[in-house]
Amino acid sequence: MEKTPTSLADDARRTRSDGAQSRERLLLAATRLFAEQGFAKTSTREIALAAGTNIASISYYFGDKAGLYRAAFTEPSPGCEASLDAFTASDATLRETLEGFYGIMMADLKRGDRARLSMRLWFREMLEPTGVWAEEIDNGIKPAHAALVMVLGRHLGLATPDDDLLRLGFSVVGLAVQLMVTRDVIDRINPHLLENDAAIDTWMARLVDYGEAMVNAELARRKAGAAQPITKPRKKKA
Picture 1 (cartoon, helix red, strand yellow):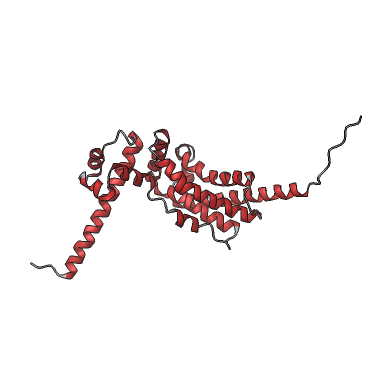
Picture 2 (tube, rainbow, N blue to C red):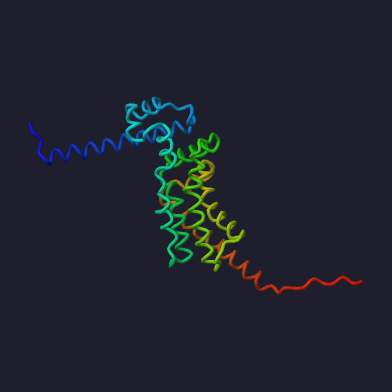
C-alpha cells in the first residue's frame, strides 16, 4: 500500500522523536558512567548497553567516544552568546543584571539528578583531565567572567578593571558555585532549600539580594577611600 504524504510526515516525526530519545539516553548513560569511572575506563560498548542502543548510534550522533564525552560535559549548558545576552544589556539596572546572571547559574539545578551527575562528571574531569575542562575555561567561563566584570565595572563607574573589581567578580560568581559544589551537603542538612523549582527560584532571588549588597558594599568602600584626605608623612626630627 502506497503511503500518503500525511503518513510519510508521521513516519518522519516518529523517526526524529526516536532519534532524539536515543541521543538523550546515550547522553544520560554516558554522563553517569563517565562520572563513575572516568573517560579512559568507560567503553562505548558499555555506554550503548546501558542506554539500550546499538554501538553504531554513538558514531552517528557524536562521532566517537571523545565527542560523546564532550557533549556529556557541556550539554545542556547554554551557549556563551546566549548566556552573555541574559545579563549584559547596557540599559539594565544592577538588579536586572544579577537576575539575568543568577538565572543562568541556577537553571542547571532544576535538572535534579542530571545536575548532580553533571557536577560529578566535572569533578571527575578535574581529577582526571582530558583537556575538556581547559577548553571550557577558555571558551565558556573566561568570556562569561570577563563580561560579568565589565558589567559590574560599569555599575561601579570604572572604565577599566582593577584587582578589587576582579575579586568582586569571583565573589559574585562564588555565591552560585557554592550551591552547585555543595549540593550533596545541602541535601543532607537542609534538603528543603533546593527540593523543587520554587525553592530554587527563592534561593536565586536571595542570591540577587546578596550580590547586590556585595556590589553596593564595594561601591561604598571606594567612595569612602576617595573621600579620605591625603596626608603627607611627617618628617623625622633631627
